[in-house]
Structure formats: C-alpha cells, structure tokens
Image 1 (tube, rainbow, N blue to C red):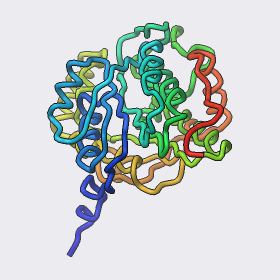
Image 2 (image 1 turned 180 degrees about the vertical axis):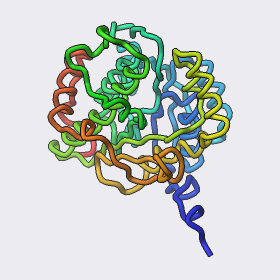
Image 3 (image 1 turned 135 degrees about the vertical axis):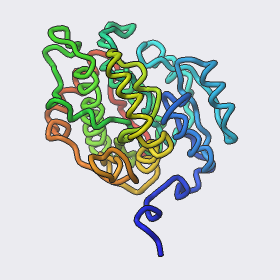
Length: 304
C-alpha cells in the first residue's frame, strides 16, 4: 500500500522535457545545480547562468545531459544586459531565477544598490524583462520563508537600509521583493494576453552553501549545525522549484514544502504574508525597479 511519503511529488515525475531550453541562474552549486541536474535528466538543455565560468564549467561537467555555461553577474546590470543581448532570439521555455545571496555584511552592487536587494531582486528583475520576449512557458523565481521575518516590508524610503542595515532585514526585504515581483509580473502577462506564467517557490530549510556567507559568525555556526541535523538535502530543496517549473499551476502560485513550518517535505502550494500579496505595493515596486534598472516590461512578451 502506498504511503503519504511515496505519494509525494518528486523528480522522477518530471515530464519529458526533450527539445526544451531552461536558463538556471546560480546553477553551479546547491539547489541551482540539483535543479539543472533534474532538468537535464528529463531531457532539457540547461544554460548555466553563473558569475564564475570556471566553476560553472566544472559543475556542468558533472552532469550527463545537455548543458552550456554563460557568464551572468546579477550584481552588475551591464553583465545582465550582456547575457540578454547574447541570447539572439532563441526560444527560452523556462527561466529559473534561482541565484541569491543571504544575510551578507552591508555592501553594494556595481551599480550602487544594497547587495541583497540588488542581486536577489533587481538583477533578476532586469534579466527577466530583457529575456521575456523569448520566454515561451514560465518564469520561476526562488523566494524564501524569510519574507515573513520581522513583519518584512519594502522600505521605499530607504531601499538600501542605510538608516538601519541588518543582514537579516535586508535578506527578508529582498525575498519579499521576489514574491511581489512575481505577483506583478503575472498581472502584466495576463493583461498582455500572454500564455507565459510567473510562479515563485521556496526550498524550505535546505542544506546548501548559501548560509556559509552570512555576516554573523555565530549564525554561521548555528546554520552549520542546522544543515547537518535539521535540514533536508539540496535535492529535496530543489523540488518546489521543479514543481513550479513543470506542474500545471495557476500563474502567481507559490510552492514550498508541505511539512511543519514549510521547512521540509514534498512540494505543494503554500501561503504568503499579506505584505507579499499586496497588488498596490507590487505595482509600486515594479515602477521603482524600472526606474533603478532602466529596464521595462517588453511591449510584446513571448507566448502570445
């Protein structure tokens, strides 16, 4: 008799992705690499969009499927533009906005934005809009349960958090921005009559190297312990992303683990805070993001 555990959706249930192309940002390690592995295993051609080409090539060489490696630094908008300009009209079935930084010491992107907001949100915002004319199926953006931390809000009066920066607060704002971006992107796609869908996912508590870059040494030590004894592995952490990328789900859906506190388990639709569901704030964030990146929603997105 089947148990609840083996009824859960897993990577063996991916559809045939032969002839489909996916871009995965940050595919050289962690959840990005396991996502790429599963997609290539199902037949997709996966483009590793990574900051370090050597690390990307080394990671891609560990997979048996069809891959290529292209440079992308989400903390540098000129690099984002170069990546998009080099796409040259190829159809793109899946764009998976996976890369991210977590709870860093205060820093700036090349364009002067707070590093976590600039990398996790603005870099992916620009990339998505620049590639959207080629996207044929969906955009999946990886957020986090951290969007709930401390009643997170978008600090429009101080997006760089200069008046009171904390690594935790900056990360929470960037992950909230990921969800609001997905909400407004789907609204715009629907309004344009596009069949492309925008979805978000979060991995729960997954053991990856993301936590090793946090600013606080005590937090790093605690996270190492958590990774060892509490977290699920990166393959389980990738399942919400893979489910969002391939399951027949409504636009603006948010996928996470089905276990207690959404920390671990099989992928399922999950909730989000009221702040992450506010269409007015989502539109305002979009407008501000266009002003900051000088990138706008394309006049004719793909999938029409």
